[in-house]
Length: 275
Image (tube, rainbow, N blue to C red; front, side, top):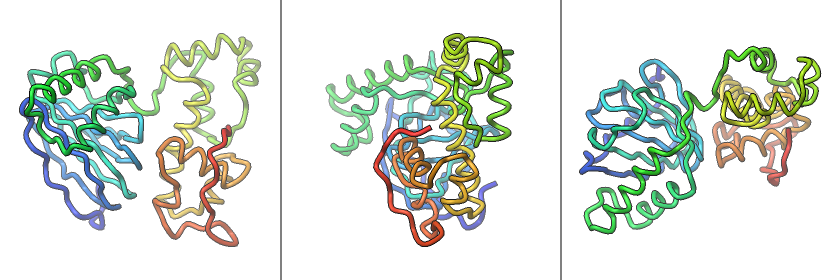
């Protein structure tokens, strides 16, 4: 349930004709009230993370991923941090071929480029023939976008389940894919293929997404960056911040500006790769 402190409420965007677009920056605590709409919606955070609740299910909308919400589906959204967010509204007839249930879509560079172009030119409803053609290219790209049930996909696959369960129970577990393969009496290559085949992402990507999801709850609990980094198994707060920035485009200190490490606030680090 969205807390009373989360204000202000955000008005609905323009009705699609046959599509409409909105790109806005919202301050922390903004809320899209729970509603149903007679058209489909794609929500995408350019910067920051938007949280959506769709028919009781929680979705995250970080950069590079969008949430698809079918027509007439009960949904609400809110952001705990400042966020730049794109909403795409699509007439019901154009939604044929899109999933019947809410899901996560991986956005291609072309999709993001079209949305950025519309935002730069402040196109909210495509009127010219050129803009309408571009809008229909966008729809075609959304139809082709890789689909996942959620930002953090889960599988009951017999080989993957022990790994997924163990990491969810202890996100600080630093065992590599090779170490997990030895534990499961299989090969690293086989386990890697299973991750890609069943979940659509690599082992390392899945683990980073898990840590992002876990970190959002810890931030909400008021934990410091240093404490969160230690809980999630990072060698330093800077390593945790680097992962968070890669996944969301922003620093965790922006979610809770008062977050401090023992001895002072942590500066954003360079984006070096880390487990």
